Length: 474
Image (cartoon, rainbow, N blue to C red; front, side, top):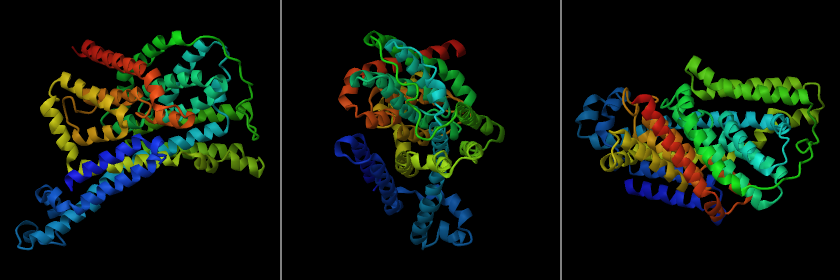
């Protein structure tokens, strides 16, 4: 059963990576994989879980159910062992994992709803209306920089969806637009790596207290910028000519918002997102609490803004409509995949992997930490960075000192590598998968036209982080 869990996990991921070929949504595969892994774990619990590891827990939690002598030495120990482990797996380990997953999902749900509310009000015109150039090269750099900072403020998935909409209006030629979007994938992932709310993996590390807001911003901003700027410079000679300016009202729908309303909702929404890490630092609540507070405030604000509108407009601009537009399949995908990784964490496979890496590479030196971080980053391009970071969190517990302490070298470098390494392949990040689905960009087109630039940027950014660390802490 122990090995079967790994097989199911690997097979599930193989199908996720070819979802566009088999035409099955990855959320369905992830949910099946996650629940199957836990089901196999439960059926094989007696052979997988060591009673000695849960004896202290059992002695405390089951003292009213099983006498101490049954838990420890009774002839009925076999029956008691099964019942204790059953409860431990299904009521303790599963719910511990589910608590962590729920924090991430509620956080993402709130963030995605806030962004949808801003989009419904045309709030992003506050930015797009200021783009005056007709040069493709200037637009290339502008969109790259906007994507970089939008991703840090919002998240790379949402940013990529917004930028697809914008590039369609500015760039008509399909191949030119794909090239722009390839750069935007690199920019969105680089921008998400240095912000606690910019990438799901960085958010996971932040929620898990492996990193803090101030440290991740100050230590990863420059490496992430290098990860973007180097590809931008190399790719620029391929971007030539002019484009025709779009109609200034291209983002206006049949439901009109005034300039004042757009500005209010845009700046309020962005302020709400920026408020989340501040609220966490002050209260020490999980980040989803701050996100729910921000969503509630923006919800109240937009209801007040439209309280005198007719019923149709109120419904269009309401949070209810934003929730209907939210990308629920993406949330379910994260649920399934985090459940699957959580099962491997609970059953012990991830700890076994950690031992393997320690034995073959080692984490007792900075070189070993850098090597493991780089490997995880490149692996995230092949599968997905979410399970890899979840696996790393499960493999390496927080320590009081050293590379694995809060804001330690390992966690910071992992945040960078996992956030940016997925750009090497279009299926390696949420931003890439979203753009691939929306624009139907072929896997091998991206590999041929964009992957090399992404890898160069990734390596240059990693080298910048290592050099920065050597200079600051040598």
